[in-house]
Image (spheres, rainbow, N blue to C red):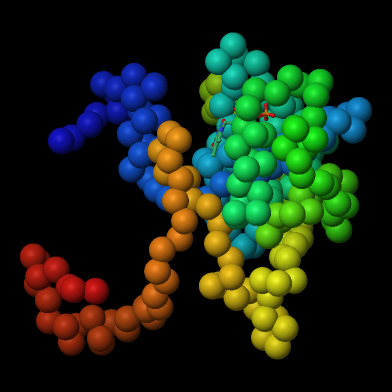
Amino acid sequence: MDLLLKDLSVKDRYKFLSAVVIPRPVAFVTTKNENGLYNAAPFSFFNVFSEDPALVVLGISTRPNGKSKDTVANIRSIKQFVVNMVDASIIGAMHIASADIPSDESEIDYAGISLVPSKTVDVKRIEQAPVSLECQLYQIMDLTERRSLILGEVLAIHIADELIDPESKRLIPEKYSPIARLFGEYYAWLGDRYAKSIPTFEEVKALGLKAGDIPKK
Ligand SMILES: Cc1cc2nc3c(=O)[nH]c(=O)nc-3n(C[C@H](O)[C@H](O)[C@H](O)COP(=O)(O)O)c2cc1C
């Protein structure tokens, strides 16, 4: 089947694109408004795109009524936010925070999470999150009236101590298990891990493959 995007409704584009580009990590984003009211919401049009500058990108739509989501409004005014990664410890809170909670109320209490100060931004991070990325707004790209891309520069990474190997000071991959968003109401956990180095050109040539000889691994 071949799908031409120009023939698909916006709803179907979303359905197919979000079903085929999986898994996506979930950014559980904390922001605050000018009165200091905290907001937390999940976004899976999210990833890290470069390390110099260290950029993460969020793709955020407006609400169905065309109004800005609180996260976007807060980032426009405060210009800082925190991306909290989601593992089993805060998955329930993430689901609660995705509800349409009125703008003048905070998701934090409803979701049963607590906030602690960040090191480099004046927006708090989620205490129970395994990893938090403290971000300064780098650029907002308003692609259309309904869709903004938010580019954030990561100024600091907080990693829970239990995920760090005390000797190497590196993340222990087996202990870090962020949720993966699939499509709609479906999520997944990371499966088996494996390691494989990038082959040299000589190694590639030595395989002697030709078109149609699909390598086993
Ligand atoms: C796992 C998950 C991922 C989501 N990803 C996105 C996304 O990438 N972009 C978006 O606009 N909304 C996304 N949403 C919906 C927002 O979380 C939802 O609209 C939320 O109420 C926005 O909150 P806010 O108005 O407090 O910013 C997602 C929801 C869930 C549960």
